[in-house]
Image 1 (cartoon, rainbow, N blue to C red):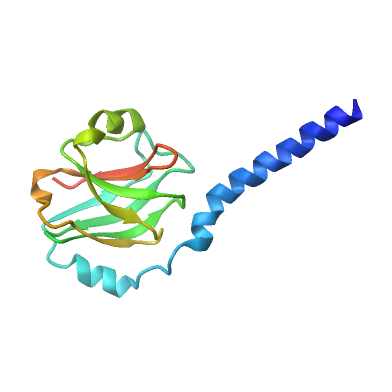
Image 2 (cartoon, rainbow, N blue to C red; image 1 turned 180 degrees about the horizontal axis):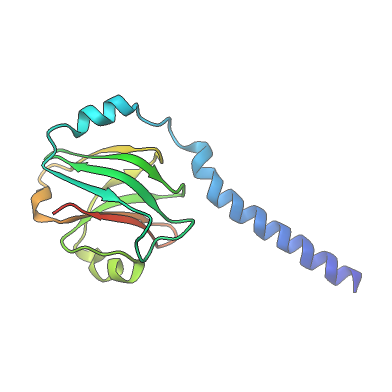
Length: 155
C-alpha cells in the first residue's frame, strides 16, 4: 500500500511540475519586451484600431489578452498584455470568432501573420501581399495546444 501511495504522489508532483514548466518556460525564454514608445510610434497612422479583452467566450484565466491593437498596412501592433504561453501565432480572419471551435472552422482560410514571442505588447510585420482590409479580426492562437487566446474585431 505504501508503494502505491508513493507512486501516485510522485506521479502527481511530476505532472504538476511538467504543467508549470510548460506554462513558465515561454516567460523565461521570451525576448525582452519592446519599448512602449516604439510600440506607440509604430501604431501611429493605423488604418484600424481594436482591443483585446478577457471577456471572450474562449478566454479563461490561463488564456487571455487585453490592450489595444493597431493595424496599419504593414504592421500589427499590440499594446497590452497576453497570458504567457508557448507557440503563439497571430492570424487574420474575415469574420469575428471568440473560441476554439469557431476558429478551427475558419482556420484554413485564415492568414498567418507571424509568431508572437512577447507578452507585454508585440509588433509584427504584415507579410508582403496581404491586404489587412480584406479581413476583420486579429486572433492570437496557441498552435501547440490548439488553444484560443484572444481576438479583436478591427472592422
